[in-house]
Length: 386
Ligand code: LLP
Image 1 (tube, rainbow, N blue to C red):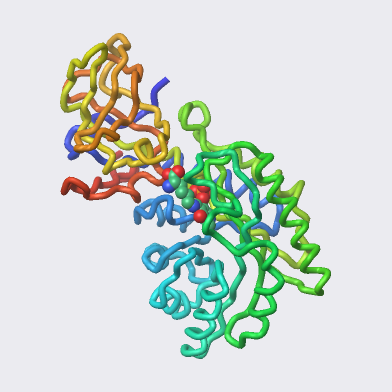
Image 2 (tube, rainbow, N blue to C red):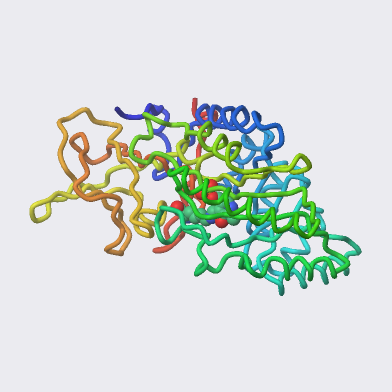
């Protein structure tokens, strides 16, 4: 089964481009609101790093989600899209002074702090602005996620977060500083996680750490468990909306939240992954030795995930019902790794056919580069085209 696309509307557009199905995005957001809402004290932030297209951001903002940012640029994009500063959290191991200042000027909800030197700089800069910054500590829970090595973040060997053993010491330091207010703990174990057992392991860790806080009479209102819920790249049509019911109920069952606490989430991929496709045209069909190539006008500069993580994206020929043949689907960039898929079954390909690379709404457009002096792809929504 292929996805449905307004191909007649595509005819006049310059390829490659990203196409976002806004109905699917809105439906996904509705499910998130319903499933997270069952708990009563859950707050969901959208991880802007997954996709900062302004039209996508404004639909997400309309749904009432907050924003999770990892740079000053993302804070600006979130503010511009209308996210209230009081719903913005700011993470990242290397926050520059100007980025901290920007966040302080907007009085964002919370800094997710990743080291003692960073905490001290936030305190200094907040003092200079005559403010107090709310801070949470990103704790590295040393929980492995069953996902690609490049996108796990919660292991001791990763650069992210503060070691669990250092937590108490860092809290002591925060409490001695005048311009920071310690409000809670932050975690994130990785991305594209489909095994709920990984999230259960995180919940168990959080429960242990909460007991350590309580032993010291510390009551914190904010627990943030990050994002990481994966999507079904193999079957974008069969399961376009990720299993948010299973995701949020895992936390409801396993994480012991105190009555004075709110549990925050930072979901990226699961929000926007399935609503986006990279649309490309076939430039050439070329015979190789024992294989044939479908050469697209989209390349690794437009969607780098296959080259960078050996990621799978379902590929569909939208223009053809001809008998299926196998193709190596490649881009025009001068790199051998500019390959979207090998021996991919596609309806017989001809020059000019539209090809969709599915499930590309997250970490697609935003990771595009201008390598080879290529133009950055544009993004269109179904609202604009239909
Ligand atoms: N919170 C923090 C602190 C993060 O580092 C991330 C993602 C998220 C939330 C959102 O995670 P998500 O819900 O999207 O899994 N470029 C890679 C993914 C990198 C993810 C980085 N951190 C890819 O294309 O697979």
